Image (cartoon, rainbow, N blue to C red):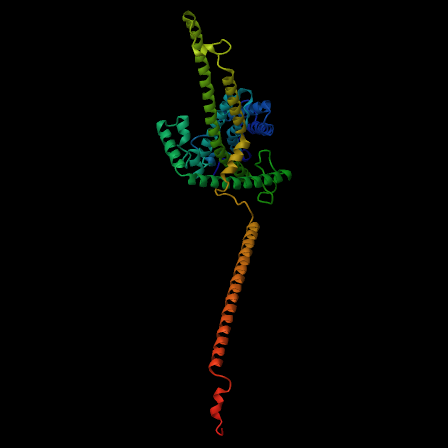
Amino acid sequence: MHAPSAGGGAAAPQADDGAPLASLCAEAMALADAARAAARDAPALASALAALERCEAAVERAALFSPNEDADDVPTPSLQFLLLPAARAELLAGAPCGEGGPAARAARVAAALAAQREFLARAAGLGILKGAAAAAAGFGGDGSGGEEEGEEGGDGAAGRRRALVAGAAAAADPGARRAAKIERFKRAKALRAATDQLRRQRDEAARRGGGDEDGGGGGGPAGGPGAWDEEDERRFWLLRVEGAALEALDARDCLRQEAQLLRHALAAAAAAGDGDRSESGRGASTSGGGAGDGRLRPAARRPGGAGGAPPAGDAESRAAMMARLSGIAQQLTLNGRERQRERVFQPYVPLPTITVEQQGEMELAEARAREARARESEAGRAAAEAGRRSDDEDDEEVARARAWDDFKDDNPRGWGNSKLRPCA
């Protein structure tokens, strides 16, 4: 049995200033929803992130979660606090680059990945995320070990070795990865449907006026129609946490790709800056040493007289490259990840370019054309055969006529009747 909720007699968790943690969490989630609605509003994003961080810090100080417990040991009012790192990771992932460019975006992506690691580790440790989903997150079925331990330190080399083995096994079987993604997609869809149904049930219970503020009361008599009790509230939050964990798994791959792209962009920019400084130093030394012997190196003979100054075209190309990379980083927001997620489930064969009716009409036209050609060919053969038969009949008629003429020549008229007259 799970721990009792706030409505069942246990004291509701509070912050250091005495304010209920549930109120702080609701306020932080409301600010996060407003920041998501206004994606380009930097002050709203900053206030939402600050509220989420304050609430997470208060939850950590209250020590509501222990690594030695599972979801059944967590009180029902405390389950909603599991979603705080997931909400912060979603805000950081969807935040634009702003004025900081790729460097600021890289910092936000790293912070989003860290928040996702924290959320997935806690969900797997409590047993909410289990089975194939926990393995995809880098944890075992019991929420232990795996990739996250290797990244955060964990048991050091052993955790990293397990992460490498798990990553190699996953990369070796693309079909298994695709099947796991499809399974997670179906599970997330079912979780959304169940969560929406429970939310409507809770709203109906609240509308009837029988529910408490924390959702622990019922919307009528216990067990009656429209009732809402602690079990429903607990199931609602567990389904929400599991759904958020599956969404975090899908978003994590895109964030890692974006982080890799940003690292390459920052490394290229740093290399370009080092090249400019070294070229400037070589130009200065050449200008000082070339005065004595009257010889100038090619870098010193550039237009403008500045031996170490790079050409304007190189600076413009670097600026254009950084602008393109900034645009790519801005496009890799939640909307871009949603589009990439939809492409995963595209058919792996080329789609048809015509409909079944059009294909049937084409085949019917081809069949009719074949029949017409066959009829024409048969008519031609019949005409040729008729011509040949007519010629043969004419030849036979001529042969019979000639034979008759020959017979008449050999037997004149009345020649054979003279011997038949006995009285002659």
